[in-house]
Amino acid sequence: MSVELPLWRAISWYRLLALAYALLRFDLAYLHVRHPVAGWIYLGALVLWTLATSRAFGNPTRCSWPMLGVDLAMTVTGVLLSGYVDTPQRIAANAVTLPTIWAAGTVLGFAGRGGWRFAALAGLVIAAANIVGHGGPTLDNVHNCVVLLVVGCAIGYVIELARASEATLSKALRLEAATRERERLARDIHDGVLQVLALMHRQGGGSEGELARLAALAGEQERALRALVTGAPQPVGRDGAEQHDLRELLGRHAGERITLAAPGTAVLLPAAAAEQLAAAVGAALDNVRQHAGERARAWILLEDEPAAVTVSIRDDGPGFPAGRLAEARRDGRLGVAQSISGRLADLGGTAEFHSVPGEGVEVELRLPRQGGGSGAGS
View: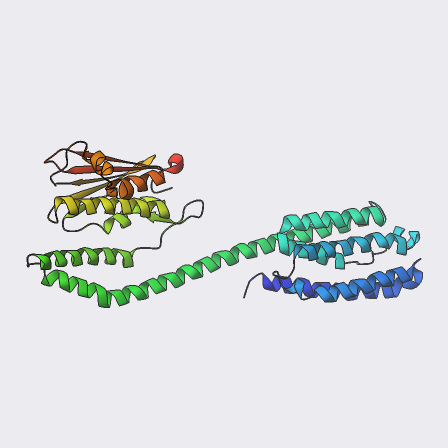
């Protein structure tokens, strides 16, 4: 149940009780006022309005701003009408207005809907009507207005705290549920898929040809899947956006022939940017396998700087001559241009390729940080 809902139910019951009090007070005094018929007409309308809106005031999803506007108009009308209905002598003797304490229900409604600021605004409007139309700025009038403002702002602040607490609790419960589901999936994967991949890797480790290649792929997938199911929940940045640790994403590529060197602390990037950068690294490694062969080795170096994140991929393949990339683009082979350079360009980064025939290829991917924040803290 929402922690805010009981407060709204209390407001709804308060309005009903305050209505009964207003009727009782006027019943005791109507023989002494100037225009009792006008007073009863207003109170009759107030009864109909209160009963018609009692359910709406018991639930924040039903209590709309137009409804609160009409409620405020009812209160102000009753306060101003009191100066016409009552006698000057009774007003000078601090006689109560027609809605009496029912007016506080309006302020509480604004507090529940918009917080203490809107409660203060509604309270000021009612206070101005009370001073202008019923007795002027007397000590009792000012006292009643101050009490109305203080109570309304206090309740509005409490409701704002309740909403914040409910949001925090809901987030914690979702995180707990996601963690439990992750643990359940990790157990199932460990008992099934991981064991099969590990068995394939062990059984085919000493083989040759396609069986050896299949065993190596099984080992790589086992490590990547194990890193995935054991990873911690991803943190969020100052703006509330989810962030990923780039080390974990690149760690899925590490294997027997692919070595990853990374900082000891988390390298956090916005989730979309981290995934695209990791995909560009994957495309570079695919090029290594395609052009340097399955037996080629590759090294990934991740550097986290205050202004940018840099990933370098180097292999021990045959390399390529100068102008080869431009020639590939002219021939319509856009693998490097789209999979690597295109991804970095979309992120606002750069991709540079360096190669000397016989000395392998080095790809440097550089992604600037927005605002120049430091790695672990951004």
